[in-house]
Length: 355
Image (cartoon, rainbow, N blue to C red; front, top):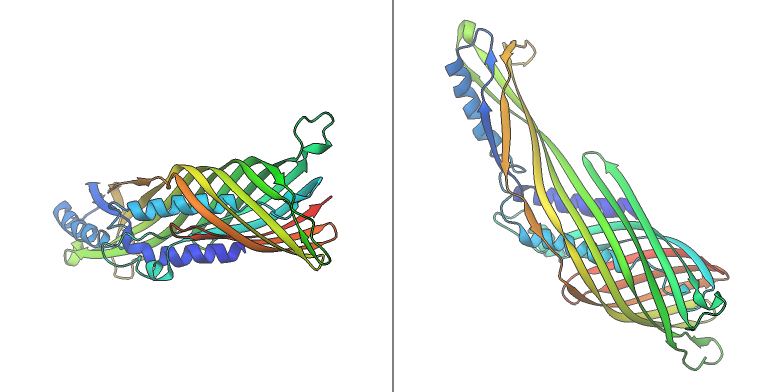
């Protein structure tokens, strides 16, 4: 599951490189031994022009849709981090799972790289652990039918030049509104449950791209070949708090298969920030193979002028959830799918031990 989440990120970022960037500026020119400074400056000016054509550098701009889409995807991925079937009947349970959220159609993802595009497209993934217990086991508990739960998740994945980190924690409470008629035979009806709580999530994605740009100046003894080595990193950081409110129930078929469904909404706060960092270094050589280095007597200063885009998720996000679960003795498996009418969906797989 984690590799699939990273693959979705990689696909989105590979398409979106033209979107983000700024302007590389030379603030102080280097001085190379024996090379006229005017020739050096002219050659470096040509390199800087080329560097500013770098697709990752040239268009940071105002990307409100992309930023808000990642913020919404972060919120989407949090509400599904739970075990639905165990929340209706357990005394105690612990579970582990992984899930993610995707906002935007595949057509929108494919158009991310179009010139001046700012599509509504984002994707986020989380791994998590959850646990819960039935408050009825507490002596003297005045309210019956309460179920408490908590969750924690952490990811730190790095593949090639891409890095994904995420952390979440939260707590919640479920209440059994009522229990329908039990049903007969192989068909059993579960209680109708209303749940709420809070989840905090912090996630970041970084993609690094290395480039080099070259130029030359002079003739004879003053001939020099210049190279700018540039490493640029696109950063997408999201911090989101959600307060989910949901009503759900399930039907058990053939003693082990659960079909569950629910409706609700997420109240979300926080936002996403998109920025670009760039490190550049200029060197000069005597030969076109860039092997015979010319000594640098004064070092350069290069800056990246960029703008940072920030956007918040939608405050209220309605959703509907359906899924299947399997109860094999104390072992429960849940596979929920949540659809958001505003656009996007979330998915997860969770395994639990229920006592």
